[in-house]
Structure formats: structure tokens, C-alpha cells
Amino acid sequence: MKWVRAIGGIAVAVGLVVGWKFFNKFSMAGQVREQLLSVCAEESQCVGAVEKHFQSCFDTHYSFGGRRQAGYLKGDPFMDCLMEQSGASYFKDQSQ
Image (cartoon, rainbow, N blue to C red; front, side):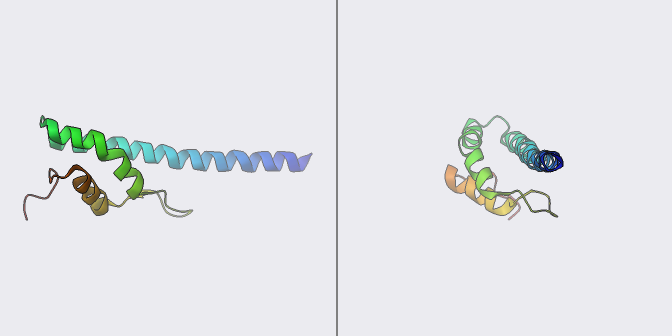
């Protein structure tokens, strides 16, 4: 019966790690979405583009990382995806 407890402990540990990685992903998604919407200000087309295309681009360009690496968002490809999907350059760096 000791092996049942060991397997249960391992399952709990794996569940905690996976849960933490998903928590970090959803937390980062909320922060990034909030920042993009603040950049949009009151421009309805920009807000609409974020609402419509954010999740698919975020899911495509977010990496959960590995055992020794935290999850991260591939920023430039994510923004390129968002601009390509929306067909506009709301978020393009204006200094260029």
C-alpha cells in the first residue's frame, strides 16, 4: 500500500506543477490583454481587433516553458499575428 501513497503523492505534485503553469498562462494573458486595450484607448476598431484576435494569437505564441524555464510569450511574433489577423497596424511602433 505504500506504493499507492507514493503514486498519489507524485500525481498531486504533477497536478500542482501543471496547474501553476496554466495559472501563469492565464495571468499573463490577462495582463497583456489589459495593456493592449489601454493602448487602444477608445478606438473601437482597435478594441474590436483585440477582442476578436487576441486569444488565438496568444495561444499560438505562448510557450509553457520547460522544467527549468518559466512560461513566456514570443512578443514580436504575437504582435505580428495580431496585426496580420486584424489587417491593421494599431500596435506598430510609431518611432520607426
